[in-house]
Length: 93
Image (cartoon, rainbow, N blue to C red; front, side):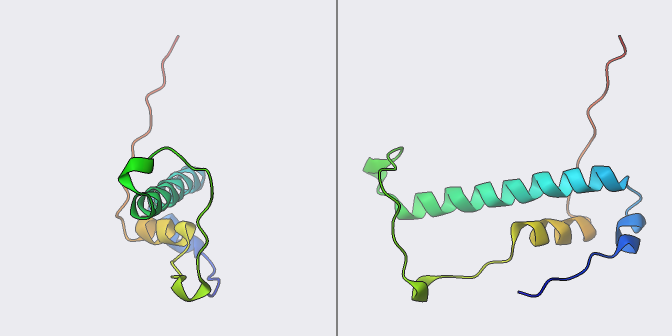
C-alpha cells in the first residue's frame, strides 16, 4: 500500500475545524478496527468457546488478506461525506 498525502484543501472544503476533523476520523478508524476484530473473533471461534481466549490461532501467510488501513478508510469516508457527527453541548455553570 502506498502512502498518500492528505490534501488540506479537501479538508477545508468540508468547512470543519481541522482539529475536530482529526478527532472524528480517529474515532471512526477505531470503530473500523474494533469491528474487524469482532468479525474475526466470531468467524474463528466455536459457539461453545465464546469469551475464552487461551491461545491465539496461527495463520498461514497464504491465507492472509491485505485490507485497507482503518485510518485510510476513515479518511476516505470523511472526504466522501459519509461520516456524520455532532458536537456535545457544553453546560454553562
